[in-house]
Length: 116
Image (cartoon, rainbow, N blue to C red; front, side, top):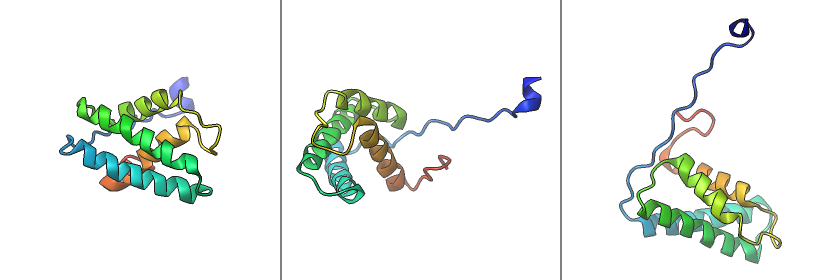
């Protein structure tokens, strides 16, 4: 009966980044791209510098440890940014991690909607 109600939908396959060639350079790109996004999303705030720096540090460490799975990278950013003090910001750890994901997908030319 359940099949008659809703058709089965195939899950979106995981997205794997190419192996890191220069994680520090990737991190600097991410820091600048995320800072630009944070400043454009609401208003430029001093806290945005620290948020972008911390997210980039987490990303670089994960990449240096060999992590290439986008979902795992996003979860690492969410988890580690939980301890970040967002009290002087409009943002939170989920917003930051989702922005990082979007920036990375855009950089790879992958449609955010459907992973294609």
